[in-house]
Image 1 (cartoon, rainbow, N blue to C red):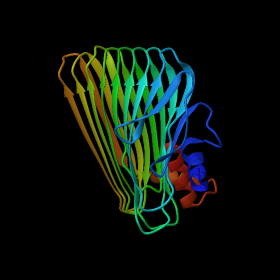
Image 2: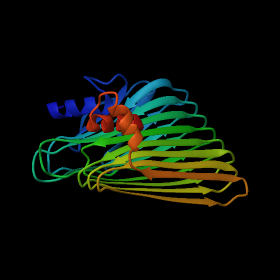
Image 3: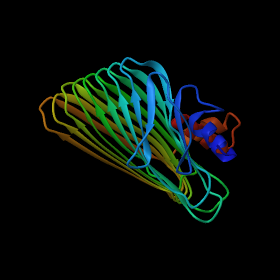
Image 4: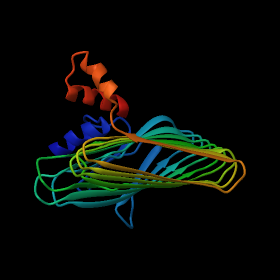
Length: 305
């Protein structure tokens, strides 16, 4: 690994040195390091770029790290990662992508992930996206995720993008079966002329399945954001979609929900709130000695926490 990759790993995955657990580190479209464990096996795909991750049934308390790093301009990276989580497993997956540009050419990472969560398995998925570097080239990250959750399975995704990514289009789709649960929590901050777009489509197919989609975002300067959520309740189920956004300067934020109930016992809810920072919040913090900019930063930090 080069020094830029090491710096990016610390930011996106809190990795310093060799990760503690199974891992695959991707650097500029190549594998920079890989390790399997007794319960988590990582294999390279033979037909396209990417890896297959096999987690044995009953595996408890282990982590797998799959960060991807781009360390210079003019890189166009595409990767396919598939996760097969065995019945009754309980694991944490730490992903993330960092794009560093050092010239005028843009660089991008497109990661296509599929999760197959077995019966009564539990997965926590952590993902951070950042863009850094002194170059003027655009930093682009376009993640695409597909999820299948079997009976009683649980997948919680926490995605964060609050620094330096010029353009991102996130697509997340999935099917949740009987008693399964999908929770997605995203945090996004855009500035300058950046654009961030999120698209969720979830089909609730099993009795007592559920989904909770929660987005919190801050749009500054002339940046733009779009949040789309589609929940299809096809049986007795619960679905909740929530978009809370702070808009500043001359930015633009759109929230576009779509709920479809195809069963009398489908309970679906959407909530959306877009607005500026309340003046009384600023005044309260400024009376404590903070400047207006410091007060804004404090409010935003608390909102995105």
